[in-house]
Length: 140
Image (cartoon, rainbow, N blue to C red; front, side, top):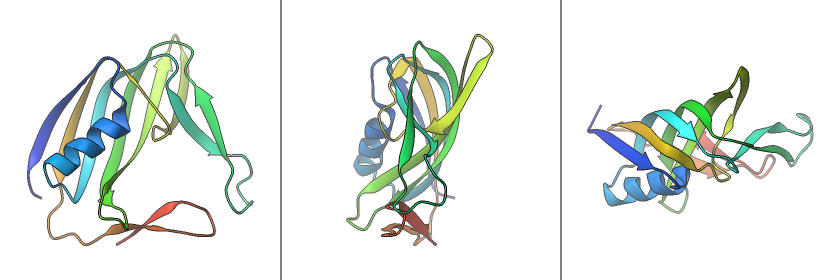
């Protein structure tokens, strides 16, 4: 384990962009990420494949209709271009309804998102493009 960062994202910030920029600024190559707070209406999430057997994968998307309480876990690893990639899944809830998905397609903070980034040292894992799925797949 390396450094531990406490990050506060604020209202209107796009989660994956902010955390990837933070990783560049602090030279974070690999990390575990925890988050708690809320996502705003119009946040987009990937919520599954249209058909789990189809290649390439066609994702399903969902747009939040209102602010949702949110908790998430994720990772940061470098892509083939040397830039950090956040892969984070969150569970969101509002008024008894829940949704889980990946925030990479444009999830926006409502008020605050508290984030803990735990740097992983001596880790050579990278995200490598998988032609079959179209995903950047972790290669340990």
